[in-house]
Length: 320
Image 1 (spheres, rainbow, N blue to C red):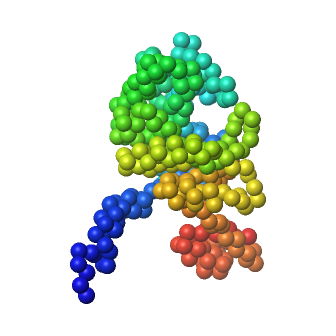
Image 2 (spheres, rainbow, N blue to C red):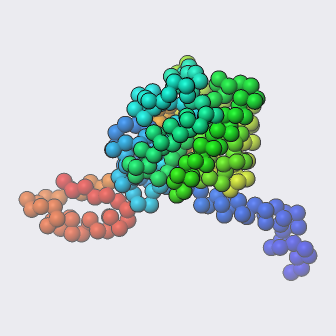
Image 3 (cartoon, helix red, strand yellow):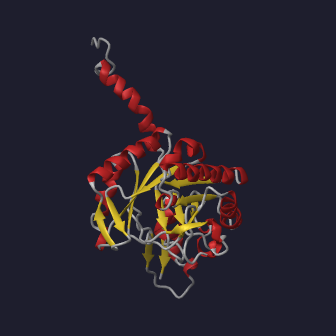
């Protein structure tokens, strides 16, 4: 059959669009599923289904507590202190430019070398020594709350770039995810493995302590920034916030809406302690096996016939 200039029956213009789109399809297939857990205790087992996990660093959430095929990122606040975190308690007063009115953290002056050195030596390095070799850098844009002039913001942005370069110099193997920081992305994208942005469709208002929808104009502006992230061949990760409900009603619908735009979704509660809706739904893996025997479970026929096949399929047998 004569096809002219088309390929598999496609017109030339459509063929060109397909060729341009194919690299993105290949990239999309490699996107990681990403989970966030900011709780203070051990990470719930359902989080072990995510490729990347972001956690508050601590003895109960060390990288060795996760599956070998998971990359564990330690949460670290770059632009402001975390109230109650001992790593920030000796931050020099000269490094505090103000206070975040909603969260209570002191906003850090990234333009000063001494403040950047404190973050590297007193915050990043101790976490690295705990075994975390990947970091989720939060609050990159906090300086905008106090430094409103263009010149002052340029100084803060330059300091932020220098800090990230210093982290990579001190720890070349460190994997870094940035929370926003869009204004410095041209300078730091090569140092990152991903970029996060919160609140595309659904958001948490800390001031009023309510869940609300994001205005359409803000959605469009954020999507434009996330497209730039994708232009650097980096995963664009979106966290949306929705109220906890039975069976997480609406969470998966929102996650699918985010995913349809080519972004990695994660929909969770305001405290980031629930198992969120992401690229895939964590499946229940525990199987309860009842057996009637006075012998230890390893000598029972239930164990002999059931344990190995279930574990091979990825399930976790529990004998009772």
